[in-house]
Amino acid sequence: MLEQQQTSGLAITRRLWTLSTPIIGINVLNVLMLAVDAALCGRLPGRDHTLAALGLSVQVVLLFMTAMLGLLVGTVALVSRAIGTVIAQLQIPLAYVLGFALELGELGVWLSFPIAIAVKASVNFIAYKREHWVVTGVRLA
Image (cartoon, rainbow, N blue to C red):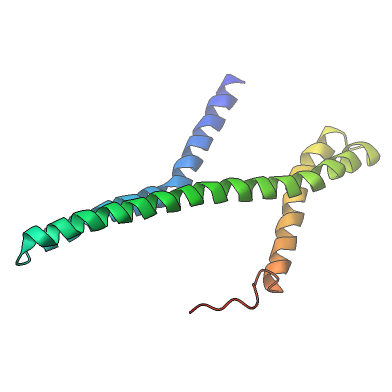
């Protein structure tokens, strides 16, 4: 039992790093971009004013990055809750039917997990192919 918990803990840690690596990479690249900007501005004539303007613009960029990261975290939380709710609404009746009505017992309950996810993925794929996700009437310009 303890080995299983340690193994699942390692799997969760690996998965967490896999999911967070792109965001960490983006933040590292943003910092490097600002460092390269400072190095390039330091070589321009009148570098005192240029570096002062760059210092001010860095503060604005960091303010927007903080806002975007906050929106990202909030969006991820809302989307994961919405997906979890829809899957749970399908999974509970499915577990009951497979476990009790079809007399599969625990196997039926465990089978309800992947079946519910597969059904939800299929519905999302069909909606995607039919372009129900496209918002009409929005103009970008």
